Amino acid sequence: MTSTALEPRLLTGAPTMPVTHRRRTGRVTLARVILSEWIKIRSLRSTVVSLFATFGVVVALGLLFAAVAAGHVGGESIGLGAGGTSDPVSASLGGVQLAQLVIGVIGVLLVAGEYSTGMIRTTLAAVPKRLPVLWGKTIVFGGVTLALMLVGTLAAFFGGQQIMGTHGVSLFDPGVLRAVIGAAVYLTGVGLLGLTLAALLRGTAAAIAALFGAMLVVPGLFPLLPSSWNDTVGPYLPSHAGESFMAVTPSAGMLGPWAGLAVFAGYVVAALAAAAVMLKRRDA
Image (cartoon, one colour):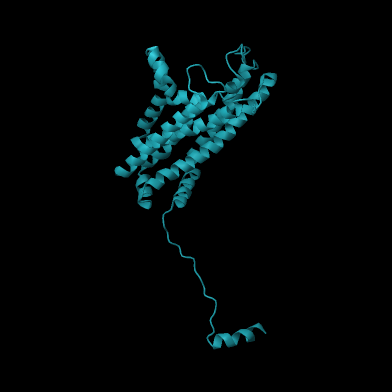
């Protein structure tokens, strides 16, 4: 019955429904660049392993420091609270100090590795406008790092407070939630600093040296300078600004939590802007 009903329309040339085909333009968009960078980062086994190793450092060292602070390991407690040398939050986030080195190196290798292998020429040939490449790497690496480190700092905090028992604090006590989230933000920022330094210097050794110099060497030298210099400039160094928003109560002479976050974010944005300018001006 159906075929006999349709036949007259076909024979008389009656209009039929147009057949539409989706046209693939192949246009380079930021979404496609982000997708390609996501494929790169998840398909490179060493990067994935290194990211989870950083997660392990944050959690394992946090639990270890919490156990030492509570006197469960080593037989001698470093003390907690007003009479001790540590507070429950900083003890459980103690792994951040070592993890910043690992995540910074991962950020460097993510970009410097492409320059050393020549992969960057293929990448920039596929994305002639260049800047979407930098934005794509920043968004993907920053997003993955922030999500992973946020889980890591929360796990270290809850595990550490469980170990400390009655000395532990709640996540919702004043300043605690900011400190835990701030530690994840700080690690993400250090990773992005490594990424942008590699984009600026285009060499693994030079970028790692610059990153370690800015985060470790220079802050370590400042106490040797006149106290007026240390008091004036010291709080604005990247690592000191980061510590101010990772601490429940910043130490005397440090910036306030939100001022420290603004200064630290300023370093990341400035480095990213410089990397963008140099990526546009220089040949691959």
